[in-house]
Image (cartoon, rainbow, N blue to C red):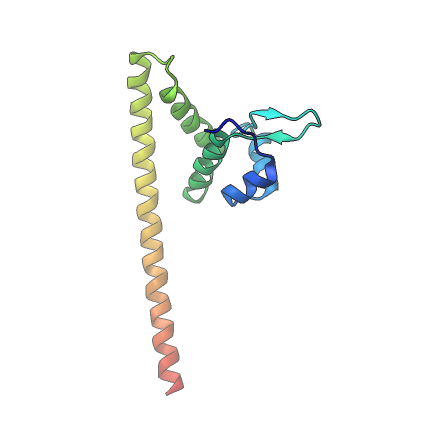
Length: 132
């Protein structure tokens, strides 16, 4: 991280999230800006952007806000040098459970996508048949 702060517009550009969505994640407490300017503008760091990108990846997997909070806490605590070995073992187990959940949800998305692609191919064949 280069230590510089970004305003919300730049963060929106970097993450592909809308201003409204970023503000919502702040309001619900899953992604708080690191600081505020003297004028009250939200100021974000690269770490804040990384956190928002993690949240963005959780959203299409239907994570609830509580699951988001919990997983982000697990990640934060695992990355903290202050977390002891015993706590790390429990956190790693929780992370493994989330990883399994993500794999399960990805498999469901892949199956839905496969069905959608088959349907698209069927419609394309139907269209070719009626154009001939």
